[in-house]
Length: 422
Image: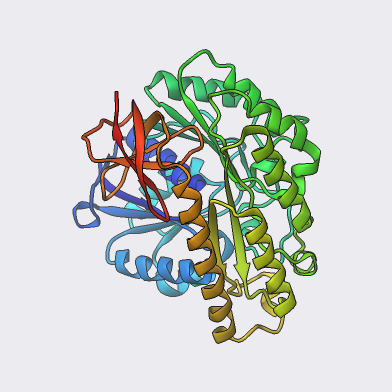
């Protein structure tokens, strides 16, 4: 028996992977350590989507490398030589190889480095897990995607789309809810193309999960716009169920169709704009989240202006802003790059714009009263969410998984603050 320390970075799918890795380790007779200092071996579930993130991963790998180490997640699959360069004695575990967790851990504990990067997992549904949050069940509904984006390294790590069966996912949700989860996250590399490989789709899955006769909320994760035309009407209809948070994360990346073409995104800016408008027209208060990349190699000043105009038009509640960085192995990395100073200038313009819009959007919620599910611990306190997935804090002490009626008194750029009124 050994003590194993696990930490994860990146998207919700990475955290789901870390929960399953922890579950298999616990079932295999090992115990989980709270810190690297008290562990016999560390596992880091990595993300490599951005240059800055990859550099952070490298720094963390180097700091954990004094003891036996397993590097899991996207970085070892996309850049195995990078891992070898900074931790030559570390074992590697790919995002679609976590079924080999115990084999890799046990071998590494004996001093034998092992590399398990082949896609051997046919499904991540039904694997044992140790939840990071007892109130939230993170369920991966698929792995991989159908896209060929020129800037993205995720496809190199996770490969082609492999959707899991609707019935299997429903049974997993039932299990999570029966274990006490009040909130279910449906996540994958790209929810938008879920089921296209197995004759299903996202609206079918949402309806099936919503029909489970239990009291819980559902957060539908990121979906790329290129698949919206195939499912948009039925997707909006599936959100009628009160269990579904009125929240869409649709990464548009640019407001310029020329840049989107160069990115090989497979959609236009209008696809995103139309979907955001439809959701708000149907439901009124609806949270729109998107991603924007500034400084893609072919983005000129006119392209950048189209992006700022799109943001002004749609006024998304959340914009995950990234400065373009060339990722090894991607097509865009081979192109002539824009000067860093210009990328920073453009980034500052959009950052200031979205900060102003986010605050103005949040101020509209002042005076609102309604039910809030408190489901996440933060450094500040326990964070709750209302029907539109707005982050809400209260000064009162609340328990994870509890529901209270809250009246909003204050708004900040990133959250709402209120008092419990019942």
